[in-house]
Image (cartoon, rainbow, N blue to C red; front, top):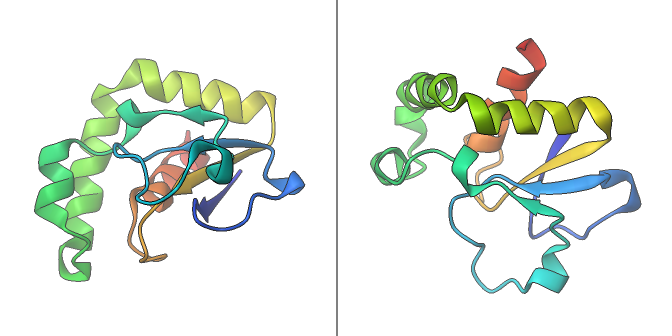
Length: 113
């Protein structure tokens, strides 16, 4: 399992490409994105996403709050966990910041499960 920006070129090694953003990436067609599954329900809530605003100073609090949301989202987390156990998966995200995004939190969360 790995993460990748959805704007990067799809690759055979990506396996199943799962978009983990609540919103579809701007300016990207479904064909160009190469998304196999869009799990918008696993993304941070709209309120949390707007509060965070990709401000690195809020990263630690964002991570804690998002992890709390994931613990309440058992059904979707189980579905994603099942996919990662059955096949090669790449979690896709749209954020420009590669060090502060929900896919990174999700990757670490699933690795510990």
